[in-house]
Image 1 (tube, rainbow, N blue to C red):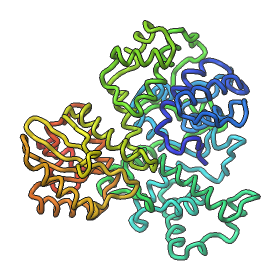
Image 2 (cartoon, one colour; image 1 turned 90 degrees about the vertical axis):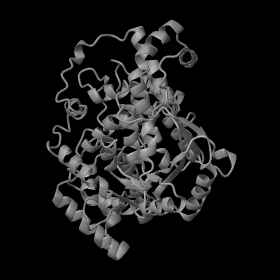
Image 3 (tube, helix red, strand yellow; image 1 turned 180 degrees about the horizontal axis):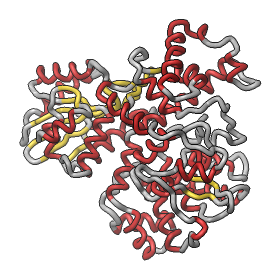
Image 4 (cartoon, helix red, strand yellow; image 1 turned 90 degrees about the horizontal axis):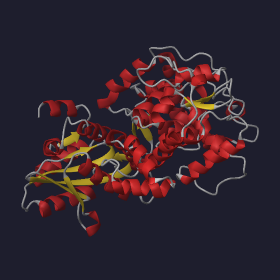
Length: 517
């Protein structure tokens, strides 16, 4: 149901940029050399792991291109058989805020589509659904209280054939029945109806869970869900935002002409606020050497921006690195780097990857989350942020501004953060150790992926005990704080006020707190 060469979409902007680099006005269908060239760029940029090729046909490139096309970022022109980026694809490739664009395409994703009717996919015609709208509708149903991945796999995926309110209610009843009766609630012919010829129940269950996991990874771009190891839900503070998203994305009817790829994709691939793709692709000019260099540099910069806050622009050091990475002449690199490197675009790209670290189970994820948080505090909030957590019983980051200091601990957990007793005790010790100093200690804060319901009360109680108020902030609210700081609405001087509210800092707090500054 979803193309899955990448389970998560934080590499997608660079994938689209890589496609933009290699596939200009050349025939795509059957062009194995071009497919291999795209695959080589994917490997060069570590989007695809080198050495995984089963053959020399470029099938890995085609698989990643299928993901790009499935989300409306590219299409094959009928007349020329060339691969073109849609307006949304071009915007993504050239550095527009990736999270907003990807969210837009995910929420508009639908069956049927040129992807779903393709011969290698062939989704049943009974599915006339925008799947992510359906899941959001179901998450807003109070009687469900959220959904597990297994419930999405065994009930929503196979029975979610529409996205109207009545469909959400219908499928919710099946979920509740499944909760009550377990496997007995499934159809006796479940495997024969929904599986392949060689499937057993266990193999089909595993496949459907993989698809459901991908769906939830994509749905994270809605910025209205909280996800832990067992349940995905919409927190109370984001119910209004989730309802507003559904209203916006259901105002228009589903896109027609799923059997005409170019017509469909040019409608699907419209960025927010754009009503029509008026480009005359037949009159497009050949790619110049300078434009090729710009696209090459752009692909490299987007890869770096996944792990670096490149906010200083085209410095001599950055240009040296780009020359080494691209092999292009320095004068040309310096010229195009001025166009490619911009504070807004590199921060947005960095944050798109940063937000995924809390769900990343790799050994380095927690350390990267800690380091990235310190970099954000320094580069975006313009305060001093020192990493001290590696020195033993110390907090992760000590922040200091004009006449104040603060303590920040990062918690890269995929589940809801509960502020367990061990962390409570550690923060007491940190506050006691850092209370004395040249500047007064003004706050302590935990930054995490999602906040458990009882954590806010624990924050309040801990603040009373240590005589210093703090906060716990989840990723949704923290990303909004970063966006407000990047826009100049708040700054480092606001951190003591924001991080000392004595409870969870939520998205709803921010406008009030900023306005009341």
